[in-house]
Image (tube, rainbow, N blue to C red):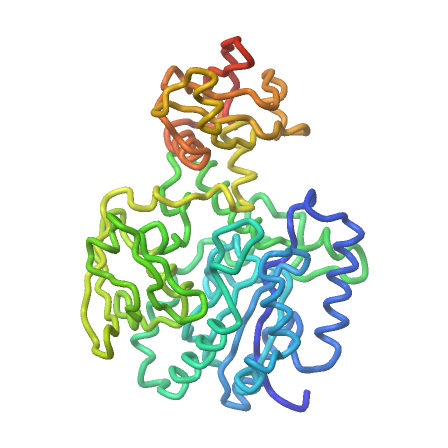
Length: 441
């Protein structure tokens, strides 16, 4: 390599097998290695060599993990790997590494929202973390979460922190999480014997890959196997600030674009135009940095913030009420597919439209979720075997008609039921009311 850059791009890894044709995925993954790894700009799937180059050059590291076949964030990924003029000069100031698998990933070092399809770390060569980049709140759309402009500003912010290092090392310590009980993903109980530490480019490369979302699934399986209620922190990882009414601008580092009326953010006196400089004492480079702090917040908490408002620094306190995480919607996450297996027998649910509720004489304050899809195979076909059909309307769970979203129902069942517990679901099918019981998994 003629120049040193460490941008680890690619951890996001591959989508669930049903999403893309297997042959197409093979071509995409192999093609990415040839296209991106062939010109020597990126240290491709080789973090150790990138770290050594960063030490020699005294440049910071930019570590990005990418799900190659995933459509979400594909535009940003393409702009970065092709060194768009908007970030080219900044990228040249980093050592760049691209990684397209979770195999062998240090789970103590690289902790982030594993439902991401594109996630970046900014680090010192000693692996001190300056910040993170990459946010997602939709299955495919990413324009409200990431942008080249926002990424460029995060790069600049990382370079500023690097220039101050090691004087700021103590402040940055909180950007690394607790040591993981599992060192690397292939050591999870559900993965043992199935995956190695690297991709098998000599064989079936896609089948040898641990997908990023599978790491999140494995973490939840560990919690589920303990047969205890799964905590809000596990169910709602890396909460989006939107859950608190804090809408951040994806084209900035951490600038408030809008504050939702009546929200925790409004009650905490945040205003549109505020630039978040620190949260819980941590410098912020992106929305993902805000999510990192929120992920480690308590069930009810107060977070000290510093903002720039009208050119002046001002302290604020973000108030988190009990159960604040439950405002999050987890239904968009790839990992929710496995949660549906555990709790809903493989059903995919959607809100029943208001006109249909009126037609079926259902009140607006009761449960009304329509079956959009019934899983057909294996453990995802439990509901099918119990007799559920597409367009059935769920109106009660164990006799409880309290209104819930699909996300809320999944969470409730995970926190009140254990594997093998029976749930009794009341559904409307046309003009008939049916009881369809099935066991949790």
